[in-house]
Image 1 (cartoon, rainbow, N blue to C red):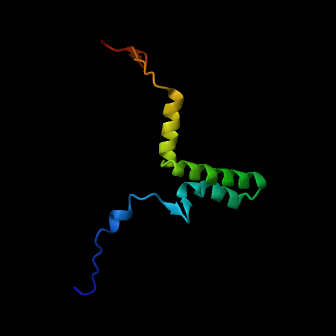
Image 2: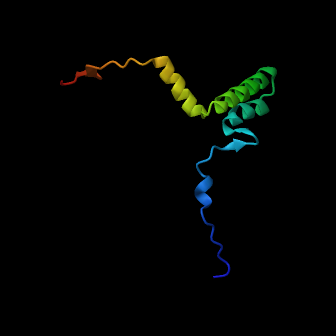
Length: 92
């Protein structure tokens, strides 16, 4: 079959983080916000989000993982046991 071209391992790049030029693709939302509503405050939001994403990536996190780590830091280390769930008492 001369017309069929077989790609080998084209899926290997599917686990990589999406990039927008040199930045993480997570800045796309503030960038679109700025492009549709060009004001000083949206420009400041865009610049702050780029700085925040760069700092997060410097420490080796992605934004969703950084949000989970921040939530765990806020919640603390103490885990309490629930004695009831949705108004029903659990059996011991």
